[in-house]
Each structure stands twice: as structure tokens, then as C-alpha cells.
Amino acid sequence: MRTLILAAVLAAAAGAAQAQMPSPADIVARWDTDKDGSVSKAEWVAAGRPAERFDLVDADKDGKVTAAELEAAFKAMQQRRGG
Image 1 (spheres, rainbow, N blue to C red):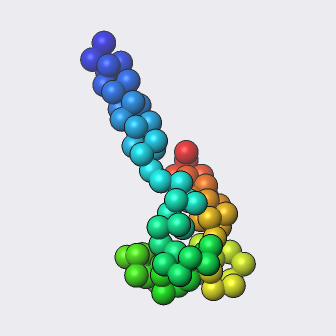
Image 2 (tube, rainbow, N blue to C red; image 1 turned 135 degrees about the horizontal axis):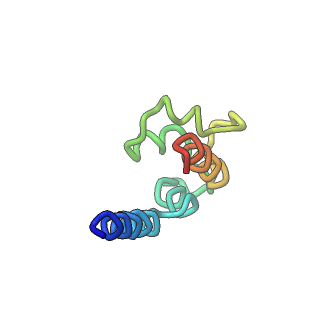
């Protein structure tokens, strides 16, 4: 019984944490300091993100990360984690 309750609590906590995570569009809006609709590498680094990860997320290699690219990166990360 305790195991079942613990599993339910952990599932609820995971759902709550996921619900609190901002959307890729919200993240881009927050980090996009020049308001051009995308995040440059300078904006990425200024937001505290590692510079080397920018190139992994910038799928079309145009020097900008869009909400769509960030969402695709999140989905790829979830798939690698088995989620």
C-alpha cells in the first residue's frame, strides 16, 4: 500500500513540475532581449545557458534559436530520457 501511495505522490509531483515549466515560446520571449523573435548566441549565453549547447539547438545553423527549434530540442531530450 505504501508503495502505491508513494508512486501516486511521485507521479503527481512530476506532473506538477512539468506543468510549471515554461513553454519554448515563453522561454524565447524571455531570453529574446532585442525582440526579433529568436534567441541569438549572445542572448543565449546572457540567459546563463552554456554556449556549446546553442549549436545543438540551432538546428538550421542560422545563428538563431526559435521556439520551434527549442521545442524540438526538448522533445529529443525527453525521448533520450525515455519519456
